[in-house]
Length: 452
Image (cartoon, rainbow, N blue to C red; front, side, top):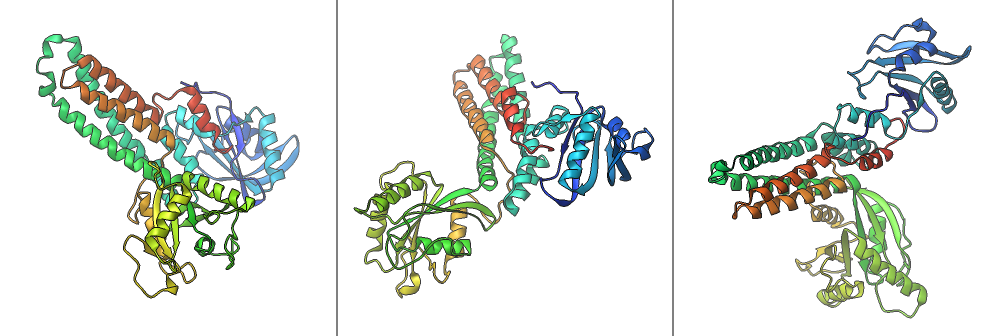
């Protein structure tokens, strides 16, 4: 496990650029001493804990700025160490001068995420909560922000902790029984081991499903629009974007390359991709566009398949579209949403297999957005926490070992059962940082902002 560095670190904790307020943060044993050097009003004494004090910053006989000083003594601070924050005017020059003065007085520049890393190493937060801080800062929608707050408050960690505790209790029972062979005869029945394992499997499966939704909320999804030329893909993209992001004409084949737009649709971050119309063509440029459309469709999380409402046979047009996209016989194709567009031009009802919309008038577009959300497991009632791919991977590993553990029960293979429970326990511990390799910790915190 990474050891805690005892240097005093400093960084600007507010975004680059000009602003009304800028914050310079110190953490470490010299924080209070450095603030005493820079703020003559303190008379060399520590600042009053948890009280905003107006101070004038000076260094080397020159005034830097007037602002506020906040002092949080360890261990009751975010990092668990002595922490000082200078709240100053948000001039990049002023903040840099303060940073230079702190470094000249004994602090070193913090690495990206080092404040959060120290909070983790001092057991102020676990690894999931540390990642939730970064997720909250980077949240692209209200839903992502709310989910990150739930993860930061410990909701995800508590679920994992419950599984860890139950797995640990079973490990103790199994390993104790192995040490005392005379107890093995009716061990499984006496402690309801099959029932406990089944309950763990259900709980783990539920957490895995929640984590999948949490990753979607956090990272968003890719949605590809595919269709024959003039099916209305670009019109739909413009409708969803709320602006003329794509050129729309009556001439088939206007879109020849991929057009990507980042949107937030009903609180879900979406990368929407308009693709070239799928058809056989001799034009080398358009042919390349069709090839790219096929590739992008296979990469997407959801594919909105547009069929022109004026087509003579909707079902055949849809089948032809899937054939052109290379999805007709694909086993692992993304989620498909069949849509009949240009419903404002027809009078007959649309078959139930298709979603009727009009990109021109907006009819049915809100229902399409909600359908896409439901395709990735989200509903208006979703109250999940943010999650990352590494969480999902660890939960899958834990689930695989737990399934293997269940297989050992009929033959009462207690040594194998103990080993599989140990692996399950380790995989779960990796999520919150109890059994996480140092190199993974370094990668996680290196992705944070400097000053956080």
